Image 1 (cartoon, rainbow, N blue to C red):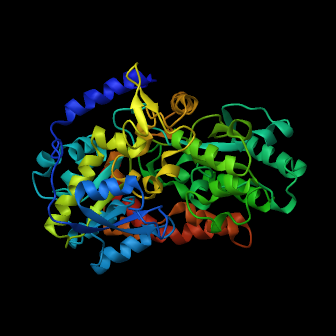
Image 2: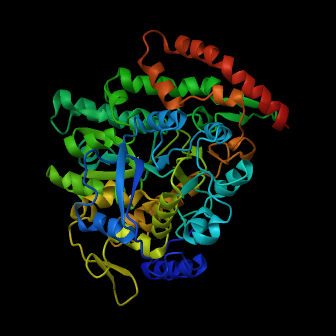
Image 3: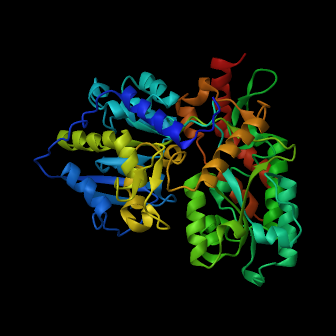
Length: 523
C-alpha cells in the first residue's frame, strides 16, 4: 500500500500502533534492584566510546540499572568475528547478527550454539512480538526452527512506504560538477549515462583535483547493487532462480552477468572507479570520501532521510552546502527499468548467547522491548521530550535541537542505542530531525521504483520455496558474490576467460544445489 503521510496523520497512526501493541511489560515504570553488566556486540559503531558519558546513554543505563559492555565490530569483520565467537562457545550475551545465510542459523541451532527464547515470550515482551509481525520471515523461521532463536530487525513497521519493498540505495552525485560538465539533472540515470558522466568528470575535472579525483567511488559491497545486477538482476540478486523451462539455474553463470562485469571492469580500467574501491570499509568507505574528502563525483548510499541529513552535516564541515553539492537519483539498467529483488523488510537480527544468565536475558529483552515501544522509538530517534523535541499545535513532532543533530548532542545516540531492534528508516517519515524535503524525497523514490519495477524479470519477487532452504550442499556453496566479482575485476588477464574459469570452479559446489532445488521445487 503506497502512501505519503502528513506528519499529523503519521502521529495518529503511531498512536494507533501503541493501542495495537497491547500493554508492555514496561508500561508501568519497572524498578531494577540488581545492577547487571550485559555484553553487547554491535556492528558499525566506534571503538573506545564511553556509552554512558552523555545524558542519552546514561538514561538507558539508569532506567534499566545496567552497564552495557559494548563490543564494536566493523562491517568488514562483523560476520567473521561473530562466527568465531559462536562456534567457539564464547559469544557475548547479546549480539547483532547479519542473518544473511539461513543455513548458518540451521547449523547453529542444530549444535545448540544460540539461545532459544522461552515459549510464551511474546506474552511478556509484547512490543518485540508486535515488531516481529512486520517481518514475514520471522514467523517462517520460527516455524522452521521449532522456536525463536533470533529477533529479526524490521526496517519498516507503521510507515511501510510500498507494498512491495524496493532496495532504497540511491546515487549521490556532485550536483555542481554535473552542471559544470553539462549533464542533465534528473531522477534516473542508466548505467551508460553514469559511465558517460563519469568520463566527462574525469576529462574536465571541474573540482581541479588532479590525481585525487575519483569520478566514481563505490565500495565492493555497494558495487554488488550496481553492477552487474543492473544489467542482469539474477547476477547478484536471487542467483538461484527458475528459467523459462521451470528449472533452477545459477545467474552468475549467465552471459548477461559477464556483460555487466565487462562494464564494471571498464569503469576500473578507465580510471573512472576509485582505484582503491576494494580496500574501502564496506557500506560506508565510499561515502566517507564523498563528504569527508570532497573528491568523489558519484557514489551510492542509503536513500533515507537520515542519510541525506548526514551528508548535509558532513559536507558543511568541509565548507560545502548540501543543496548546492548533492543531487540524488535512482540508478537503473540500460533498459530504463529498476533492477533488484523485493526486500523482506528486515536488516540483521539480535541473537543471544546459549549460556546467557537468565536475569541478563530478561533485562536485555526489557531493554529491547522498550526500544520497540512508541515511547522508546521517540527517545531513540528524537531524544528527551520537551528538551530535544515537542509536539506542536497540529499534533506533529517539532524539533527543539535547532541546527544540532541528535548524534552531535549525544554521541551515544549514534554509537549504539539507535540500533536496538526497529531501524530508524521507519521513524524518519515523521521525525522532525529530518527536513521535510528529505522525507518527501524518500517517498518520491519509493514511488518511482514501484513505477519502474513493474517487470517481474527485473524487480524480482521473493522465491519463498528457496528463501530459507537449507542443506549441506547449500551451505558449502555459500559465497559473497560482490566480493567474488571484485576479485574478477582486479584479476590479471582476459575477463571473459577468467569468468569462465571461475564459473567452472564454482559449479562444482553450485550444481549439487541446483540438483536439489530441481528435485524438490522444479515445475
